[in-house]
Length: 60
Image 1 (tube, helix red, strand yellow):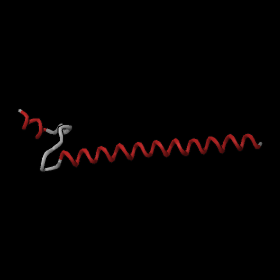
Image 2 (cartoon, one colour; image 1 turned 60 degrees about the vertical axis):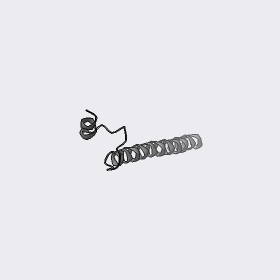
Image 3 (cartoon, rainbow, N blue to C red; image 1 turned 135 degrees about the vertical axis):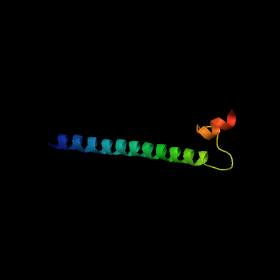
Image 4 (cartoon, rainbow, N blue to C red; image 1 turned 180 degrees about the vertical axis):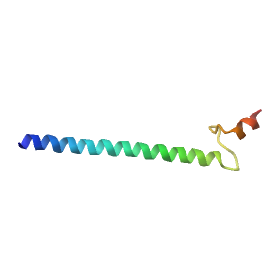
């Protein structure tokens, strides 16, 4: 009985930290995507990573 409770508790703790790590990755990815989009909309100089039609037309 005690070992079953201990195993369930350990699985719960491990699952909590795994889900926390996945959530952090998702938030980081969304943040990077948002920053990239803001850089592409910058009127000064869009970064070279931007693949918009405007950048392609300017390069032709």
